[in-house]
Length: 293
Image 1 (cartoon, rainbow, N blue to C red):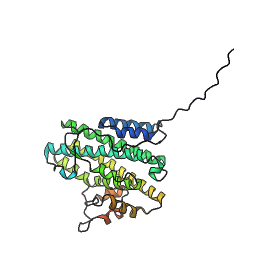
Image 2: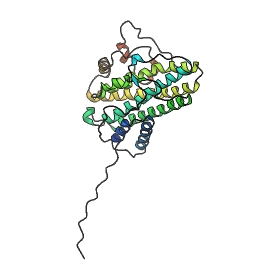
Image 3: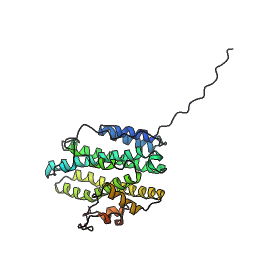
Image 4: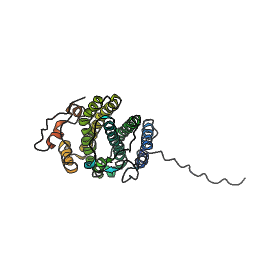
């Protein structure tokens, strides 16, 4: 009998990892395909099919469709009332939600590398931001569906790139990203969304208002996640959270904190007044309150 060849060791298959899946979704240009990829990744993570975090090459900018055209915020037209005004408002919300998808994805992919994060982040960090990305993808699809019911679509109107431009300034600092995105921009959403809901209800568009109510409640949880992880990373670095947040905001978005504030919603998310009231510009009443829903 001829001699048998020696057995080759069986290679252990590399388990699928979260960060490469997220980077792929981040680079996807079609918003619907991007949101579908995010929601599938969230399901796989929850089901235990993406247990590894992994590392990846992070796209310099997220994939975006050819439309809408992006313009500076100062060139955006003021919204009117009636159907055109509702479409413009919902289009702006859809653009914000798509940006929020990309920002959550970038947070996962960029800071999966401990060297980039500056700390070793636990799996719970990635679970939380995967859940946030899933929420934002669901929000985008809800608003897109409502635009379709109004015979409109995302991309029909211009939009601005201010959110992503501000985020680009924090790509090298996890603590700065957490300070700016959830604790300034998303917190600002808590201030302004009740007014948008009232505007829609006054126009008789209860369907759109109901979608914004869902978004509003979810965003409280997103701000809470941002605050929780800002505190955790600040503790890992041994820095004072309030003073550090104020310093980072003054550096990156110095004029972004302004009243009126939705204090009850901010308090519910853990973002107490000691953080933001000292940043209100002189001459502006910091106690001005946004009417709640």
